[in-house]
Length: 220
Length: 264
Image (tube, rainbow over all chains, first blue to last red; front, top):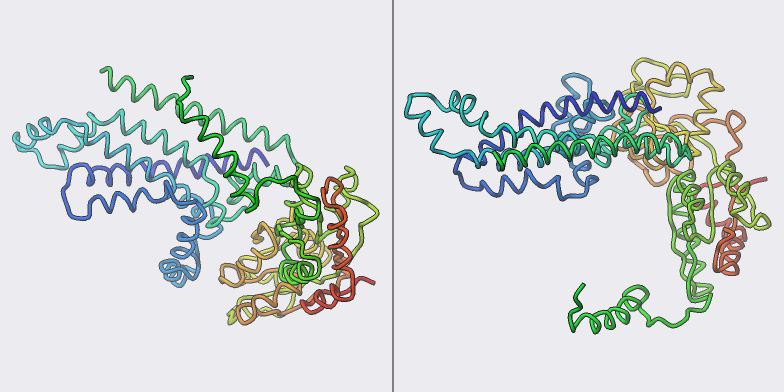
């Protein structure tokens, strides 16, 4: 039970972190550099999963992506497939839950880039796209990586929304936090302990790494 | 730590307020009958027990608080010292485990209800399922049952599927739920093609789930519901009173109203 849960968690969290990294950086960039109405409202909605009970987020995900959901029904009628009870569902749940951390980190990291460097790049005739990849991104890199590491840790610990959208199927959608829950309820204390230890170590390592990344950014 | 002058009076105020918030009365040494009892019961019993609970409160004036979950989950909570007075399980295994650890009062233990398993599909389902045997058809992609590790309904369902030689064919399509009502919910929401639940569960989902087959309990059972007073109960008398009410003609009448059978 430990090994399949470990492998599955790694798969789910790797895919989720990759998606979060790309999407979160993009959203963080828009929030940091663009001025538009309802900008803070967008930020608030994106931050919602951080403060809502995970079961509420999971409930919304089912309403949206379940077989009869607002979007899910079209996916189902087109493909005969639905996100519910699949590992991809676990990716979506973990991704949505961890996205706010990435958006917040990315926005802060990108806002801290001195706009004068970007101005210089624009005045040298470079477009926004090239300026982003050659000036803004390298300057904000440490903060972005810190955000990615924290998102990784958050996604690794995701429980509530995953349970609701992806269920708790050993070998298919049972990630480590779910395996701990089941092992504990079933009285398999040794497995629960081992999994808890792995998750604790991974979380400590993530926070430690984040602290190193953000601290040397300040002293640099 | 430096103490603010106001800190002591705040603490004093809180020591009066907190008991008030907790039970609405000032903190008098509460008599055993003032406490009310907590009953941990299998979630399949929720409607019947809520009604029995109302009757109990009418008759005794004592309050009953219910905690409904899968029997395996409740068993674990009682083992961990949850303040529970009565335990009603959907399986004998969970009660046996508590008895082996001497956590229940053995003399109060009795089987008070029986149940059977049925196969349900979402109302208006296109998959034309009529029997358990048809679960192996490829059109049935997802079958919900309770998690056999903690949910008695799941243990019985596993036994049934094994006896019908269906288990190896359907194992990869099983969706394991945290309790039997979640199985029913998956069916009602049309997330699965079929689910295996208790015959009594279907009453609460009338119109949203259809029973297409029922299985005789010689294939997996009998499904017996034991009840007992928990040894650490601080209100043994009241707890015994509740157990007696469940087993009385009035209790049986309510249980049969919700579809439960009486054990022979």
